Length: 571
Image (cartoon, rainbow, N blue to C red):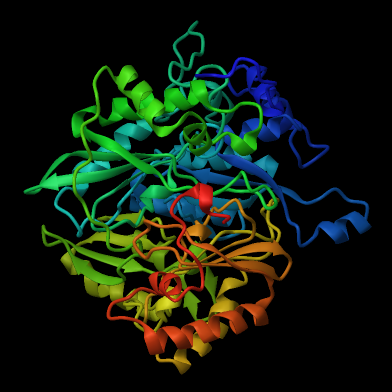
């Protein structure tokens, strides 16, 4: 039920006039007077997988010197299902050194990000990873983003089938505009095809103005919820029987972002609305996307996600419309059980006997630092590894399908470079911690996250050690703003930046990803965070029930009330 009386937002007008995402990007890229893009192009570049940013650490000094901010581009490379080949890993490593800030960021959506790419190097960088069959189209923007999938091949016999579904969904929902080919691929025939001569652009799924807002899809294989399925606009829960994939439970309406001071914005978890057979799931994804295309709010982007569409029209009305567009009624959801959202570190062996090694990557930042040269180690492994690399939804990496003759070499190389293999020397809190990029490059951040979290974890580990909780797995997630890129509202401990050095503290999320947390204290500095959490740790150590998780405990003991729906998140 689209609203025909609305006044379109600025971004909607930019998309309408863009000629299928071209805008004036070609002119922006050749303008050497500034390191920035034309204002309208800063919206359009997102659809091509990039955000314009500045180095905020340098903003004040550059302003004092009467220089423009140090503009650069972040590039997000799509990796459907999180699987990259050694050749692709080596190319990303090379590009990060040549054109970016010499680091790779592994994101909470199983993608690579490159930071600090100057405008004059943008086209060369994008062409570089397209040459190894990777792309960045729809890495950002008002389209379906990177499709997530459980990346752990050792955990289920149906993993290969579920991964193939994620790949098919990604391909089906990729924008069809030839603007990406024109701007970035320099006339070379890569895996994104050139348009036929004389053929006009068209977007049969998205239309000329694409979606009202970003759209996220994830697949999970119970009992592992390592893609945080309910935080997505569309979540697909694999249902298997005797080693065969039957189909998926369908969950709609998840999303993390909110705005401080606006109580009608809120994080929300997706609702299960039925079951779809595996051979019909790609079409279902298209139909859900088109409902959001037609019904979503295009007037105010703060209310444009599918979660607000659902709460505006009602779940029953949405389900009826979906059934109508599908031409059949969804079946009832099937039984399943989630147990955790984290990664299992160390070596594992899959059903087929293959070896896999999951490594913790703190903050998702693949870099070299004294005594811990992870970037170099992974680069050296990629030169002989015959399997693949799998990015997890928790910012970690799996060196997957390691040949038996390479296992000892991989182990020795990591040890030589100071990389802990099993994760046993890390606290449970640190093993499960997530952080967004935040300062110094994210323009939305109010406070630090990735750069600061290790320091805070050290303080909290001191408190936990006093109560013999060091090895207890407790989910902590930190972001520099309320937009929720590291899913802070799913943390048993959630920290969201309010201003430099100040955070809101949230408690009470479920360890298996099936319940949001709730605000406990506001505007805490580091000492305040430690002061508030230490007595709760003490209480947990003394009074928890057998196998009781920290988030469940904080609700049972009355520190916070359980959040049962996004609409009572603020209560």
